[in-house]
Image (cartoon, rainbow, N blue to C red; front, top):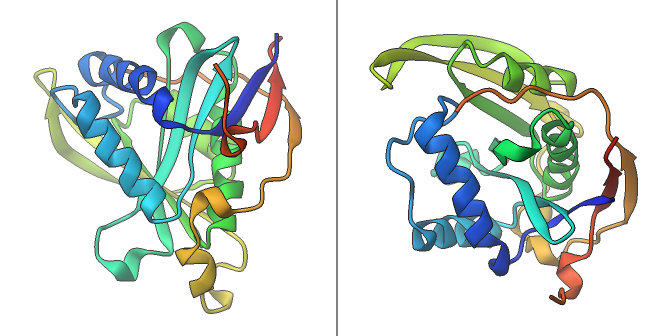
Amino acid sequence: MTLALRPSQPDDLTAITEIYAHHVRHGTGTFEIDPPSLEDMRNRHADVLHKGLPYLVAEEAGQILGFAYCNWFKPRPAYRFSAEDSIYIAPSAHRRGLGRALLQELAVQAQAAGIRKLIAVIGDSANAGSIGVHRAVGFTEVGVLKACGWKFNRWLDIVLMEKTLGPGDKLPPDERACTRRYHRLPVAPRRHEEQNPEHLAGPGGRTAGSAPLLSVRPR
């Protein structure tokens, strides 16, 4: 059975909301305490796409198994060429390499959208799975902020990691790429075989824009 990575669509948001709610309730990768509503997730999804940034899903046999997106690291516009990534996998789909595959494709699409720096803000310094996935995709550790979150009756660190995209700071940014809508970006289909599995800790018809970016054959 083939798994496809593709741009998310509004019809995916119910599954995305359910996956994220699981991580809010049971994981330390996110510091949210109460799961956001479907309407909240619709607004967040729209914000990402409005900025011309990628929001991807992993789909197999019509089921959404994970999602990944990036958004400005901070809301002020000078941050518009630096984006923070977010990746969440359904509990039934762990240890299949989906996190790594999603993150790799997210980096490709973020660079195409004009992003020069991807930043990971990983909840819980014990989150070895997420740290390992980011490291495998070329992120390097910047530092640890100690005991800055309180969840599940304990203090939690956050781990900061970064990955330079394209020419990084060697050239000025491309303002035209940054303002381009994500659904207008050219998407070249690619195939991808699953690689090293990760251990993420913690916690009908399609439009043309939903064509798979690449396909993954599960082992």
